[in-house]
Image 1 (cartoon, rainbow, N blue to C red):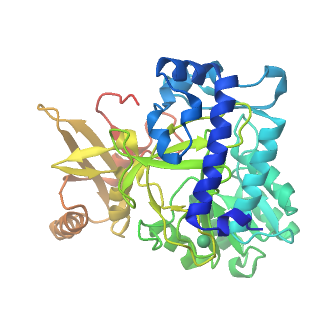
Image 2: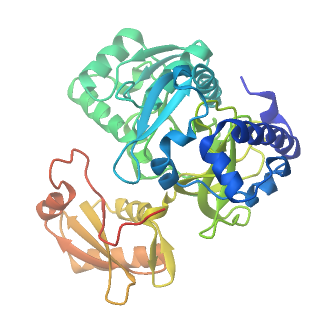
Length: 433
Ligand SMILES: [Zn+2]
C-alpha cells in the first residue's frame, strides 16, 4: 500500500504539493480568521503563492500564536467537530485542536500508509500500548489507521506488563506500538516469569517518543539494549498533534518517510531561512487536506535533518532523521551548538555510569554553562579521563563534569512527584518561540 505519488520523481512530488498548497491558500483566505489577518497585515495576495519557494513570503506560525489565538485557527463551525484534542501550550494553558469527520478520515489514511511503510498488512494484529483517551490524538490515530488498513488492533493502553503479556499470549499480535523504554519493562517481566521472549508472536514494534537511532542511522544504546535480549524489528515513527501526520520508517530504516499528499516540510535556520540541503534546522510544516484547523508554516520546535536520496524501498519522498533536539534546549557552548540528546548518547556508552543529569545555566557574561553530574558505580580518575577524552572527541568541546553519589544524582533526577526521570535541567531564562 504505497501511494503512487511516493514512487514518482521529486519534481512530480513538488508539483502535487504546489497544487495542494494553492488549494490550501484559497481555503485559508476564505475560512481561517487567524490567517485572514496574517494575509491582510502582510499584504499577501494568496493567488501569488504558487510554488513551494513562495512560502517564504508568508510569516511563520509559532506555538505562541497557536496558544494566544487558539480559536481563530478554527475554519469550520464548532458543530462540525467530532474529536476534541489538547496538547501542552507555551503558556501552561493547553492548546485545543478540533478534528472534523474529514480530518479523522485523513488521519486514518495517514496512519494506514505509515503502518504500511513498516510492513504491516491487513493480516497483522497490532497491540496498542499507548493511551487512547485523555484528549490525546496518537492512540486514536493508531486505532483508525489499523481499521483503515484492515489490521486487528488490541487496545491495552500504557503500562501494566502483566496485562500486556497476557494479551500477547492470548491474541498473538505480530506488532506492538510502544515507547521503546517500556520494552525493557516487558523484557524484565518476561525474564522473571519464564516467558520465552524470542518465541512470542511479536515480529516488530512501532516505537514512539524516544529515538532509537544515531544520526547516521546506526542503532543507539537503547535500541541495542532491547535487541540484545529480544530479536524484533524496531521501527521509529515521529508525529505530533499539530502535524496530524506521521513520519515512519520503512524496512530499510533510514529515517521517517514523508507523505507528500499530507504535509509540506521546510527545514529553517534561526532566521527562518531554509538551511542548505542536508543541513540541520527547525522542522516547519504546512498541513495539507486538514479541514478544521490547518496550519501554515508552523514551527514545530524540533531540530531535524532531512535526507533526500531515493530510498531502496522505492519511495522518492524525503526522510527525516531522528530528532536532534528541541530548539529551546539548544546550547551554545564555546562556539559549538549542542543539544542535550547528543550528550545522553555519549554518556550511555559507559557501562560504569549508573545515572546522570545535565544542568545548563548562564555565566556572568551571559554564556551557556554545561555541568554534567554523574553517579558512577566506581568513580575514578581513570574513568574521568576516558569520559573527557570521549566527550571531547565527539562534541569537540568539554563541559564541566562532576562525580556525585548515585543517590545524590537520583534525587536530582526525580524532584517532586515526577514518575519519569529528568535528564536535563535548564536554568537559563525561559525561552519564548
Ligand atoms: Zn524507504
